[in-house]
Image (tube, rainbow, N blue to C red):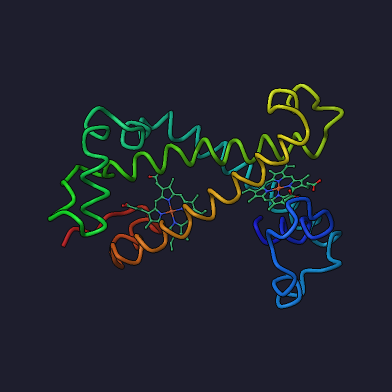
Amino acid sequence: MVWSGILIYWAHDIYGGFFPAWFYSAFSIDHRLAEGMAVHFAIGWPLVVSGVLYLAMLIVSGHWREIVPDREAFRLLVPTILGELKLAKHPPRTRKFNAAQRFAYTGLIFVVALEILSGFAIYKPVQLRWLSALLGGHESAHLIHFIAMVLIVLFFVVHVIQVVRAGWNNFRSMVTGFEVKE
Ligand code: HEM
Ligand code: HEM
């Protein structure tokens, strides 16, 4: 989505200078608007469907209780971040997801929802005028779509660094759905 979004962005570079000229030429981004839109909308629908299924499962299974920040998460957020950055001795131990994960995962659900809603708002500004208005108008919806993209990229970078730090067993359980006790 980010890649195809950049192919679209090239054609209408409104935040001029965000991507320098060498970036466009190095990755041959120029003049690929049609391709960018085709890919953006083709991958967008599976994203919407899997997002809705994920949310439904999160609620039905009660798994949301492990993700939404509880009272302990508010208390442990700062010590957890300091611990992960090795600025304090140990990140506090929690049952499944630590305080920083709870905030990141819950926040991300809202950011992705906002990305999808703002995407539809700028896609159909006339038919979905109410949605566009809700997001502060067309220009504002556009900016929200862009800022949410930056937040998703930031999450992704930190998330994958943490996955590498957490190790193979953790990754395997995320892929298979089973935890291996050692
Ligand atoms: C993770 C999900 C998504 C990401 C990371 C993403 C990212 C981007 C980026 C970076 C751009 C170019 C920025 C710009 O033109 O301001 C863009 C443009 C666009 N996106 Fe998305 N997008 C996502 C989901 C969606 C969805 C679900 C839709 C629904 C229709 C959508 C519709 C659009 C449209 C219509 C444009 C063109 C905006 C214009 O007129 O310039 N996007 N997207
Ligand atoms: C933008 C893309 C991604 C998003 C939005 C995302 C989102 C999430 C969310 C919401 C969770 C909590 C899962 C739950 O509901 O129980 C999670 C966990 C996890 N994700 Fe991702 N993820 C992304 C990319 C990745 C990638 C690329 C990897 C692997 C390289 C990965 C590996 C993991 C692992 C191993 C966990 C489990 C963490 C734990 O049990 O402590 N994720 N991710």
